Amino acid sequence: MKPPAGETAQCHADLRREGVDFRILPAQDFGQGCGLYGAVQLTDIGVPVTGVTAMRCGNARAFAAWVRNAVAPAAWQLLGSPLAKVEGMGTYACRNIIGTRGMGDRRSGHALANAVDIGGFVLKDGRRITILNDWNTADPQVNRFLRTIRASACKRYGTVLSPDYNAAHRNHLHLEDDAAHFCR
Image: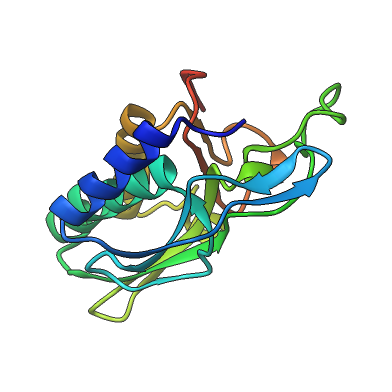
C-alpha cells in the first residue's frame, strides 16, 4: 500500500528537477483500504489544471510529464493552438472500482490517490475539447489529438481507461500509476 520512502524521496527530487511546484502532504490512513501515502498536491506544472487534488507522487510525476510532453505539444501540433488548461475530474476518492461487473469489492486506484481522471482541455484559441463531447467527433484533427494523447498516456501509466473501455468512462480518461499494462 505505502510506497517505499526512498521511492517517494526520489519522486520529489524528480519533480523539483523538472521544475514542477508541489506541496508534500502528510500521510493519512482513512481505514478500509483508503489513504494518502507519499502524496503531493501539484501547485504548478506549467499549465493550469483544475479538479486535481492529492496524488501519490509517482502519479503526479507521470501526470506532469504527460501534460507537458504529450498533451501540450499535441495541442499545438495537431490543433494549432497552445494548451491553456487541463480539466481534471478528481484524484483521491475512497471508493471501489465502478463500471465493471465482478469487481465491486476491489478498491479503485483513486482510494490511494494513485489515479487521476481527466475530462477535457481548453486551448488558448478558446476551443474546449472534452472526452464526453469529442471522443467520437467527426473532426479528424480533434479525433487524432484525443487518440494521440491516450496513446501517450498508455506509455506512462499502467492503466488507461477511455470511453472505448466502458460506459463508466464515457466522459473521462482514467490514468492510473500501476503495473497493469492495460490500455483501452
